[in-house]
Image (tube, rainbow, N blue to C red; front, side):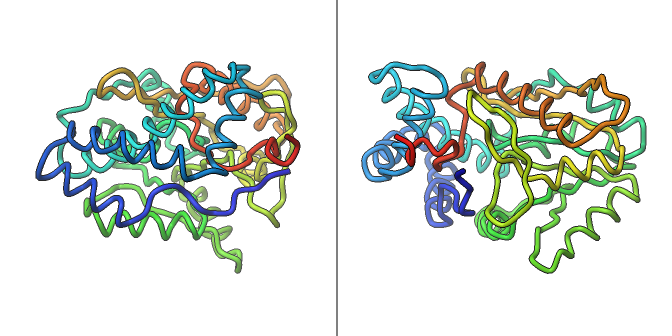
Length: 297
């Protein structure tokens, strides 16, 4: 079963170049440059391009020709989300329309005052979540995103390129397990924890569940923590719409079982994630052999 190696698309230099274009030439100019960058990745990022194409053919049932078109569009849309994140952080928020399909669900979670656990994934543009939270009353709630050490380094590199204040803090997964104490303390203080819980990293505990036709390993930790702590749970995604629009989807899962176990949470999570992918197929941004399709192809 494939696992993520901790590497993501984009480099600090690439961010800085696009940031300069946005600041001094404009947002549309950055989108124009992106056509060339996307083409570069299609041609020269061979392994990720193959993995992406197999996602569209084997997971979504697209034809050979349509899958290649989708790969090109997928790289472009991913670049757009990075540009948009930079633009919003640089103060161009007024250029974007942010809507809340799940505002009530989030507000209800906040109103309980019990903290909770929010599950998301590497789809859409979750990195602009703080700008949705700015519209809510968070005076009594602290939010922490749980990230791997590799993701944390990439976040620091990005923040070095774009400096902005944020209400969101980060809990970094460490080999010494210190993050476990940080997460337990956060929940004990009725804070919100956010997990992008779709990527399995080699060496950690996992739970398997069918996802788009094949069993996939998911990191057990977030689901086990949610089941053990019995805190409110929310599934949340921020997806790019037409033009410069983003919509926040949030849903409170309903469980039939009297005792909630990790398998119940991951099943509900996968069901919601599949719905997001079917509706936004170009916004799946896991650029590695997620289903072992390359290995088995």
